[in-house]
Length: 259
Image (cartoon, rainbow, N blue to C red; front, side, top):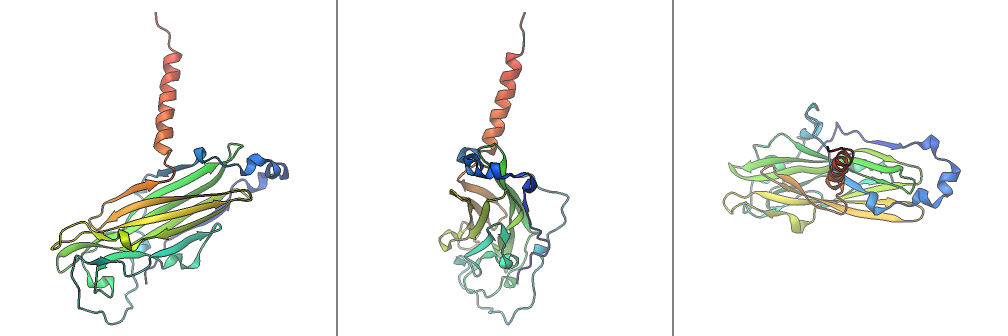
């Protein structure tokens, strides 16, 4: 079974000692504006060692050597799984993942030529009516790509979402669920030399005493190693950075004097 031995999840409460009863009873404490929600891709940590997720449990039974049509690509493992439930990582986070392999396979080890595992790190955060950051979640999309069958095709395994850090103020609960719909598992190559692809949908909910806020992030992963974000309920990071540049330039021009 797939092992995420290097996974570390830190669930912490921000400023827990500084939240007063007066703050909590003020309506602004739980008033999260959707305009404050920021999702962004984080820089890759090039100094990080190869994740232990690259290691697989080799204890499996007799594999079925009869492979069906190569371009009939399916997910043999998990379709949907919970990552975080009310700020707490769930136990089965160490075993849940999806793959995209030819129909008729019984195990990913019937394929060869797998690449080094790839990751992309993301975060989302939000602020309340006081302007305080009340939630920040950091996670990464993880996948191993490039597996082939007798030199044909490029397939996927070990596709999952790993939570790295969860920070919340008192009274805020975060839940994350990952899903790979069967309808998104496809061949984007040719019949003779298929390329597997799938959508990894990350659904999150932030719950408070007065409201729930939910959204979905969609990541598109391919067997040739390509990965991109194709959908986000809130994607304001680039927008905010551009606005900051505009504001700085405007301030500079305003403050200039001309003879």
